[in-house]
Image 1: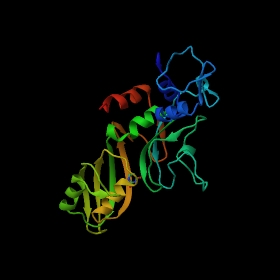
Image 2: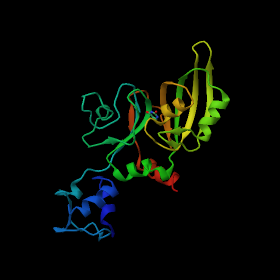
Image 3: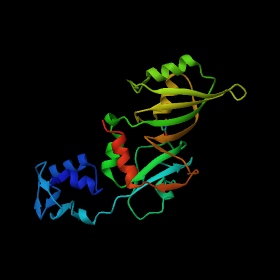
Image 4: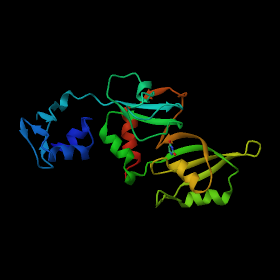
Length: 239
Ligand code: URA
């Protein structure tokens, strides 16, 4: 027996939080009866309908790891008709990206139809590690880099501790390449962190998320994640 909101989230229909809202709104039926209280236990023999949908018919879960190219939008749909990360993946499942990468940012992004994994990887308390490589304008100093590591104020709130390493300083092109490791996922976080210490990001790539890397994937290429890898994402990041 499992809690109703968990079973709905595990089906991939929506997140657990959203399932709780739908229960409150009277949009969930178990064996034909509307359930409004939270925490009701159900099992596989129960017939569960969410907003009129039989959740057993909801698709199997799928997971893709994409090396996102530049010039592709990291949403499931774009109102302006631009190419999205979902357009790059051959699937008939209703997938969407976990988190965001900017239009001009490249690198690792996970796509899925699993609301539970999405919640887990994006919840700040789980502090999932992300590694970025940024090319910035100007020759960065060690002092500025340590400011970045201690935390800078963006959107009125200090960023948590980060790790950073200078990979290259190029006097000829007046640019620097920095590896930055962060555990948050705020909007445009890396660009804003550099902006906060007076540097402009010229290029940005995400090289890893947790233990997942881009190994073997050229720009625009993708592969499926194995169930073992999905389990490891939860296991390695248990808090
Ligand atoms: N930080 C940014 O500024 N942009 C991204 O795309 C990802 C992290």
